[in-house]
Length: 187
Picture (cartoon, rainbow, N blue to C red):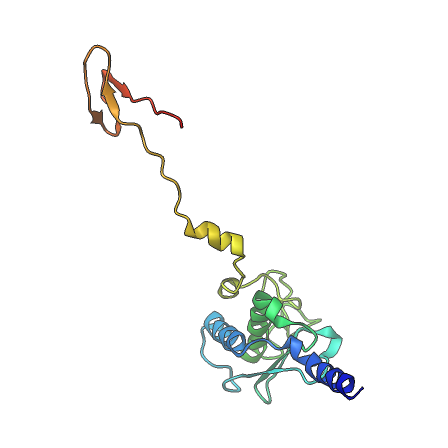
């Protein structure tokens, strides 16, 4: 019974850790966000990244806080399974720190923190995936295997003299007049 209790306790305590992205994934997404915005650091300084301590409002995937220069990502998503989306969330939240809360007030008065353009990274649901995030897309095993095999080159059969004994070479990669491609033997 004691053993069962210890195992249950370990499972319960370890359960929230499933949503943790790797340190490399967080660092890489931060670098990609910095590359995407190209204008240096946000006004608040260098952002820090943290898994949200509580569920974010309205089931958001991320949140940015200018006062502490903090970017939080949702605790309810296993980000290790969604590296492209994680990068997209970090780029979007970094944008909030760069642009401020009222940047889109003139074009989107109902939501001054977000773009009305559905293709913009600052659209509420994230918009189109930025190019810097696409490199995080997983390469499946069969694609890797296929990529290692060099493409099969088609080779021409050597030219042979025709029955009349004319021409035996090639001209511009083709058999010269009076010669013909040799017959290949199928095995």
